[in-house]
Image (cartoon, rainbow, N blue to C red; front, side, top):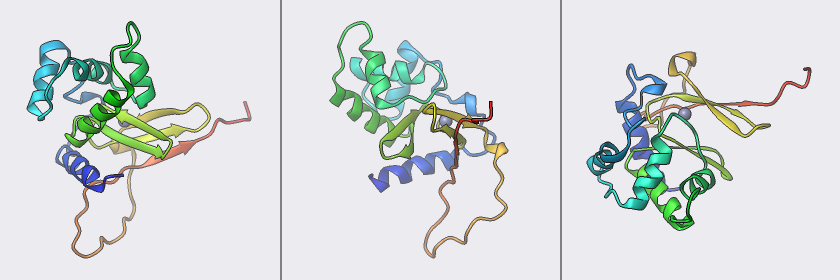
Length: 165
Ligand SMILES: [Zn+2]
């Protein structure tokens, strides 16, 4: 994992920290020209393939894996290669347009909601769900190592199905 990329992402999140609602990502529900302008503003050249991928990602608040995005963009015709999907996701993450949520090395989700928030992960269903930032309170956080500043804190609450039912 490229730590420089993570740093930039967290920096963006901390900038957005105050008052943002989980479902109010600026990127959400954009399409066509607006989406194209949004990519350009963040230093991403809006090619046709990138726009296809961005349209899938930003159509609603959701958490998709690279495989799900690949399947969605190629639903009608196989137009975007796996390499392009992976490279575009890397680029969008680096530019702060999506947030990478790494549940474990084999399970990475792409989240169009880049403001500070937390997640539930259900290991039985494989589903990732948002938790509003106000719903998590920390009684204590460790003292930061010298020469560092806090760039963000994010929590994954891991779930299993309740077998009592
Ligand atoms: Zn999320």
